[in-house]
Image (cartoon, rainbow, N blue to C red; front, top):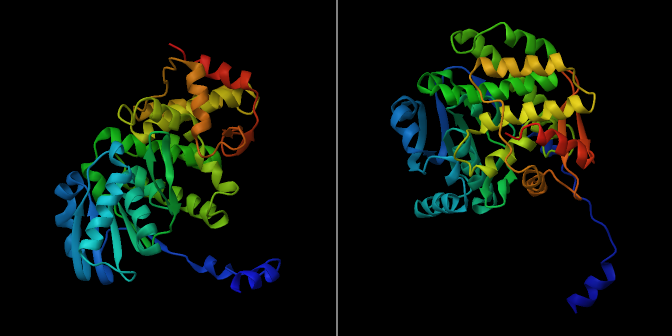
Length: 360
């Protein structure tokens, strides 16, 4: 009987108005952490390295009814389903519920896994980001993208799940290795190139490694730019795709090297240089602008030249990227410094010509 009724009303439409979802805003604090207050159970999720260095600093600042510490393996190669399943098992062991909260305490890998775990645990619980790397502070911790890798590529399994708050404290950067710091600078440069010409020229005149005030300002400007983009396009249906400048090439680099040879920011730096080559080929970027971008990356000892061993194999890997649709690759390209365009359907010959420029 129910089946017959369903057939009769099957052509009716019911609309659910979700406009109030836009009120799901949150604060990003760029200052020394004072207190993080949590109602209900809380799990602080970190890795052995960050925990060993900074747990003593953070733990006294957390006020929660019940606090558990969960440690996951460190490294991009562990950003996979097995690690998320381990996290979920610990939450069930401790009888977490929908009123519980997770704190992601670490770099982008921890943030991605904890955010994804929070998104799928009992269909979604709150989480807070406490990023400890420069790259996570200016990029990964803001915007609600969460996910894990599989053998087909990077971040192909995930969810959009916004944090309740983000606490950015430059104290954690004091122990950051130079390579990790430079990887974060790559994301700062990315934001300046595609959105803010004045910001780019300001970066040319400061040294973020030695000037802490300039570093905080660079973080603030980067986060402000990203926050505006996320507010306009939370789920990457339009303008948010611009944040993938350097990533289309960079993700292939990471995949080819098994996520072990280069840090994410290093792959993005090389990806930006490759994207700039393609942009010059299409008449979007002047050679002197491309040179200025590469020079700024080199100042922080970032790699800028990836050796493409097999251009055809590299090209085919583009189609495994989640931004590839209908066999068309989406390339974010600078249109001068301070502006961008998103190009689809670029002739294969132009892309291959760029890849061949990087053959050793």
